[in-house]
Image (cartoon, rainbow, N blue to C red; front, side):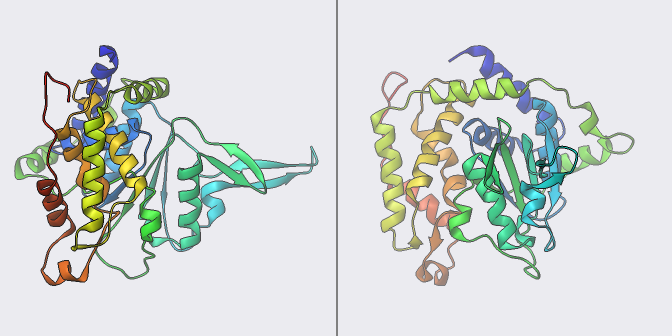
Length: 318
């Protein structure tokens, strides 16, 4: 693994940490998902820093950033773009939608229509826009950070389980600690810390780091470990729906990204366990038995990790 890219990833994290206080783990997971080529769902209440995180990330990486507040009247064409007739050239010209950028923040995606949601999810999956039968490639890299508010269901259109599966991870920001909140209050009295975020990388660096992540070594026993974890979710009586094969592939890719961010060129079991709950929580469905027992998804997923034997290590590599 090239040391310069690991150091660059650390610089990106440090720039974001200077603005998003006390959320180091969330920042690491968002960056790991980006380097693994995925998209992020932030499931949290308003005002905890979701937009700030996306803005800081875009500035630290020099990525073109757009934001759209999703409401019931947002149309699919607002997201994907549309064609308009140009009488001077007597041809139809394509006009980009707001989602055509490097980093797109889809604010409160659960407050728009299912048709508009599907339009965005198609962009995320295909990496291109198709308007009036003509394909238009999306910028590379292309990252979507979508948010949804778990409090209040009036006027919402929740994403179906099959569409939630399109997001690589689902994480929550959570409230800051008292110390971090005091620092936040002091820092924002007379300045906007976002203006101090420096650009330490560019789009080409992100693409290069993605290629490095693909080279991270994964031993067969790690693949066996990932498959065993997935299998346990499928036969566990506390789940009505277990981890899908897409989720298993995602867990493997993200484990390599975590290993890269930790400065290693190989995956260890702890990399898998570290990111497992963020990959699986929005993909699995609890059974009635688990709900009656008062268990949360995180409780059952933790039990899955405890049940599956961890591969032994030898000389650093598995």
